[in-house]
Image (cartoon, rainbow, N blue to C red):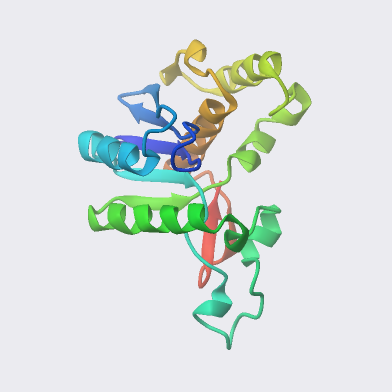
Length: 197
């Protein structure tokens, strides 16, 4: 298995974008500083590491009605959004457009790019009962739980998970690794766009 990215994708200059990187059975994190262009940060990381697969927490398609009104009728949500209770790409607007632009650019570099939803991987790890996305102590507990479920020789330094964005990047990466192992689920309609977990 080559290099794999899991990305928690945030607004362009917020400093909330984090990349979890799998390389040679180790996981490490890169985070963008506030007021730095998150999209350029991702492009630079992709050019440097040349990942074979990227799982990103952002919509990578629009509701199918915009391309295929004969088969789809919902102008707000994709089937995948309804199945996962995710936000509509239409609501996310500019963030979704930026993610689609990045995805198109990565595909031009022959990178396998897929949409994921860390909240669903958090459910697989049963993180809600550990306080998923509530407070700093819960962040440590959730990180500990994920770390405890990861099989050797895969390893990461739990102290590097400094924010919920780091944890969501890690969960996006866990979805990518599950995909590579054949242990994954898809949500949505392939004709419209799938979410991989």
